[in-house]
Amino acid sequence: MKEIKNFHHKKVLVLGLAKSGVGAAQLLHKLGAFVTVNDSKPLHENPEAQGLLEQGITVICGSHPIELLDEGFQLIVKNPGIPYHNPMIKRAVEKQIPIITEVELAYLVSDAPFLAITGSNGKTTTTTLLFDMLDIDKKKPLIAGNIGTVASNVAQEAKEDNQIVIELSSFQLMGIDQFKPKIAIITNIYDAHLDYHGTREEYASAKGNITQNQDANDYLIVNIEQEVVMEIANRSNATIIPFSTKRVLEFGAYVKDGCIYFHDEKIIYVKDIVLPGNHNLENILSSIAAAKLTGVSNESIFKVLNTFTGVKHRLQYIAEVNGRRFYNDSKATNILATENALAAFDAPTILLAGGLDRGNEFDELIPSLKNVKAMITFGQTAPKLEKIAELAGIKTIQRVDNVDKAVPVAYDLSEEGDVILLSPACASWDQYKTFEVRGDIFIHAVHMLK
Image (cartoon, rainbow, N blue to C red; front, top):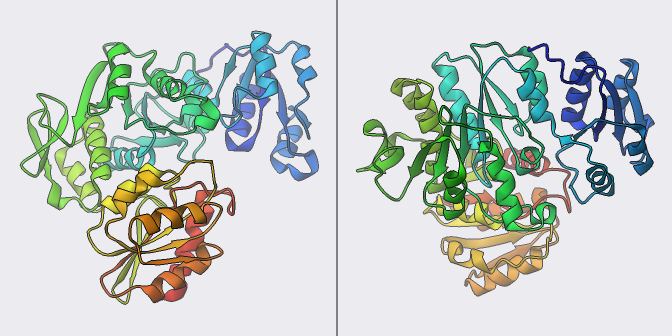
């Protein structure tokens, strides 16, 4: 870890805890900052805050008092989930207090370079694929960020011969200043998190921050088929590496004659790849490009792609029960993700869908329902999904209370050879704390069938 002096004797406010907030507070304390932590959860319900208090860190819990900002803080490290229209953050901006996220701290102390992945869909799969390719090739990768490991904790342990593979959300990328990945990937950009960002332009701009500090010695891997992504690429100073599933490129990663190429080098036949879905082919192309740029062998790439069956909750194969194949795609919290999941299967499909109602309709999902023989709905959006199921000509539509009850109903409606797919097209928060909880309940229900 770099022994930086940037924060020595600075007054720093860590706003919002969770794992990243705890990691940021502990690192800043170690770097000699005067740290205050502010979290909305009361102290008696907040073991993380209690632990920081025991370490000598000032902790203020139970609310976010705006007058706290009058205490002369020189920096705020913000939990990524706190939006910029939050009164506390708006006041900090007015007072011109710099605001960063924990990712920036990780970069500043890391001895290892960063390989960073962002995008609307496919981030976790791409991050995991790239990590596995580097790992099997003995490149000493570490994994961090939005995928579940705190970046600042990982960075403190990283050595110069490591490489930190990091998944980054738009929320995290809004809070960077000097962060500069050696390789950056933008998988795609679609409408998402507009309740946080306000407009698609602001959302795309946040994603584009991943390359704002890159130069010609760095690489930006981009989906050449997306105009919004290429607009970011055109503004970048990095060396651009495109990928495409639709056309043969002069360089970059692409598909030709049933085979994946990087530049003009044949890497692997598509038929040898286990992971289903054209959207996953995009993730595979971008991860191959990054792997090749870091010197990973074709043999290691083949080993990963010939065995990798998916990330948990992302079109994850669960089991076959009496000839029915069950897939957990609980991470599909928007329509596009569900469209991609449905496109991965030719077999008759029973779709389990529903969740938080964010005010949108689902009409654009109709063309993707051609192989859906039955739809099981739950959650706030059940009526809206039933409406489009009827418009799509699906004859069997049934509403249930939750995912747990949906699984046996789907099984009873299925036949041998069918796919039973949880791909909700909605966030989970109306019924479940996270999409992971929703997916785990689905997995348990499938195993109960067995």
